[in-house]
Length: 109
Length: 109
Length: 109
Ligand code: NI
Ligand code: NI
Ligand code: NI
Image 1 (cartoon, each protein chain N blue to C red):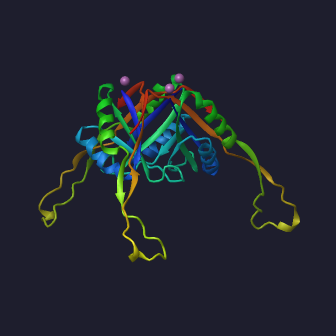
Image 2 (cartoon, rainbow over the protein chains, first blue to last red):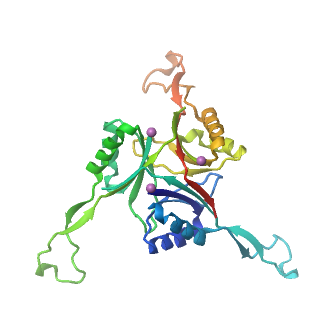
């Protein structure tokens, strides 16, 4: 048995938990408060058999990897918005920090 | 030293923390947010000596085991409630998912 | 890799996370709800290399150790506050409970 702790972005949380559930993995979502550290992040605890660790890691990689997204830039305040065509800018979104912890024993009561 | 992580139902939380305190065990309660997974659940972290793991497991088993409860069924909407005697139905309540993790070292500052 | 779990007082939380950030350590703050246990406490998860554990412990010790603080006592209700000079009283503040957990593997996606 392993305990997988994954810190992901809020925006990837629903897609990830859906994908975990479809594959019969159970996750517990911990609320993480802001502070200036990791604002907008979610922590999931996923317990799984040793043989299933690679599957869970694959689901995390597929649904939460850091990637670039094109977003419309905000028009400069007071600027003449008609005078130029705004170019979309790339921003990094997503990303997962994942710890796999050993488990001594596991029980269901 | 071990770190016991127990995911239990909210409704068993107070009784469990009372029982742990009476036995001089300290628990830290983590807020877990809903999502559709494990709605209404609470996660407790309990640090304890290796020799005390069985005691903590016993307290968890006693206070949080899954059991059946009889509840009054909801009358069918628009049905004629006078025409039958509602039979109480059995529902499963409680239950604990428990992970015992090894601890390399422990400090109090 | 290690996972350090530190339960500290809320009042030490900002100073600690500032100190961790200055030293390039990343912490994830978990919200812990009250109950009567550990009211006003915060739990931090800090992932770090084995060689950095002592540094993190030093930062925890420096910023969160239990210490005495002098506070002005509350005047007795209905008493004649002019008739005596209130003596500040010592109270214990701070304190950290720290678990260092082994990590099998670590990933960033
Ligand atoms: Ni195992
Ligand atoms: Ni031990
Ligand atoms: Ni290591």
